[in-house]
Length: 198
Image (cartoon, rainbow, N blue to C red; front, side, top):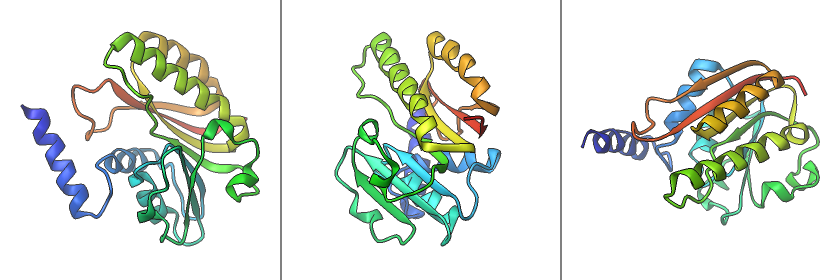
């Protein structure tokens, strides 16, 4: 029963704060704790839809920054009016050149709150989730500048833990966090990598 109360609190708070989803508070907590985002940053958000992470990021990075959102879903029109935001309906795995996103340089920060389509079969979902995580890590050399920061959602499993141990060496700092707004039954946590070694 308690879980619904948590959900309602963050759901109502998101409505009141004018965010499109409650997941914004996960990024807010990650950012407050690990200082991922800075004014002026160029940020990319993989699988941004509906866009609460973009709303938060656009405030933190300010007028001199820019956040690019990519999702296979149709562009969320609520975000298109924000001056430092660009959203694209694309598959991140099909982008061969950053110029397709109208940027010249690699990103200071890569954010990924993506999850695979779940089946409800835990083992299969864990495998799919890990495949997605591995694929996103595979994109970092293209998207993330040396010294950049990275946040990714992971669905916990022994295989995921083993995989992440191997990726630690890609960053100077590597942390795990289960944000307070995550539902207690959820197996998700976030990996926060700082200072990418490219």
